[in-house]
Image (cartoon, one colour):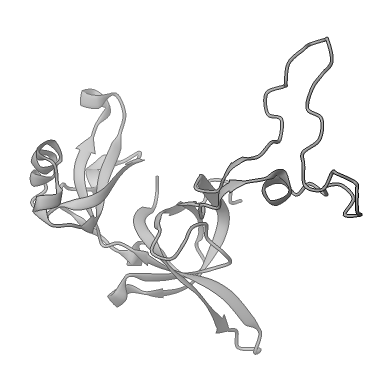
Length: 210
């Protein structure tokens, strides 16, 4: 990891280029995050840092988490996540990491949890066309046959069926940072980010950008 922060999605808006074009952007609150723990290859088998984000009251923290986060001396946090790094020596326990870690023009990946849509049928969930809407057809929004006769006499894994829609971890890759407000820990990225307003997100440098 060269760059990485925890944050939340504040919502969407738009900005305007110098030529007048409107650009849709997502507003992210990136940090402040604090280094809770450093992990090294000699002691833990890999190099990483653990960050905390989202302050909470001490009465909402369990004793094991409280003892773990007390070592940093920066309060208690709702979210914790590890980031692999090649150089853990650059970080110190208790160090504060802010949005100015990123710069305009950076390409990032954002991980969020998609909005939960509840239990949905195949038309809403998978985009099936459905059957005729005419009177008496008796086949409107059903998935249709899913069997496979006598051989292999089972439903194949991965068959698209009704079920829980949304509320899944999803990553959007190669978003471009188009604005930063370091004093407010705000990052503006071009395009959409998964999740609802105030949803937890993980922001990191793009792994597939060339």
